[in-house]
Image (cartoon, rainbow, N blue to C red; front, side, top):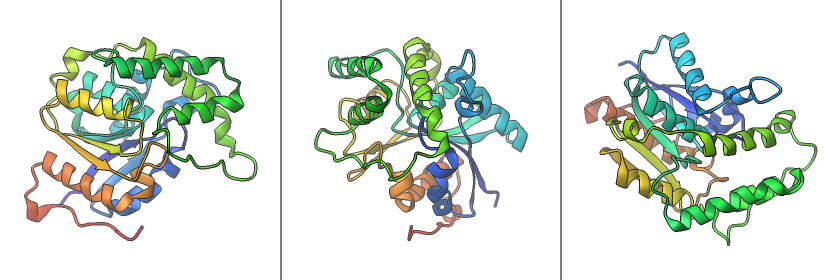
Length: 267
C-alpha cells in the first residue's frame, strides 16, 4: 500500500523541523510527511513582495520536486492561513486540508467580537520588540492561561528573524484577497484542530465561520487542555496523529481495514 503523502507548514515562530518532529514520529511509516520551512525565512530578510501566495508557490515547488501531483496539506497558525490560500487557488492539487488553528481565514463575515479582538493586534505595532512577542502571545489564549516562560540563555539564531516575519504575516492578513468564491467550492475533506484554552474570540470563531460558510466535509477536533502555544502537534502528537490518519484515509477512500498502521503512541 502506498504511503499517504503530506506537506506540513509551520507557524511563524518555530522552524518546521522542530515544530513537527514529534508528530512525524507519531504518524509512523505509513505517512510520508515533509515538514517544509516557510519561504518567509529562507533568507535574512522578508522576501520582496512576500505574501501567502509566496508560501503556496513554495509548497507546489516542493510537491513537484517530490513528484507529487496531489497531496494532503496541513498548516498551523500562519502556515494554516497559507494553506487556506493554496486551497482556494489550486484545489486540484490537494487531496485534503488540515488546519491547526490558522492565524487568519479571510476578511469577511467577522463577528463583532472577532473584529474587536483583531483591533488589539493592530495596537501591538507601537510596542518595542521586547514587549511585542509577550503581548502577541497573550492575545491568542484565554485570559487565565499561564504562558510558558522563555528558555534560559540566549535565544536561538533563527529567532532573530521572527519579529519581522510575524509582522509580515500580520500585514498580508490586512492586504491579501482570499478568494471567497473559490474557497466556497473546495469540496475535499477539511480537518480543524482547536485548543480548548485558545482565545474563544480568535480560533474558535475561525472554526465556526469556516464550518458555517464553507467546506461541506468539515470535521472539528477539540483538544481541551491545549492552546495555540501548547499545540497538539507538539504536546499530544499521538492523539493528533490518529485523528489525521483517519482524516487522510477517509479522503483517499481507503477501506477501514486498509487504514494506516499507528505510529508510536507513547510520545
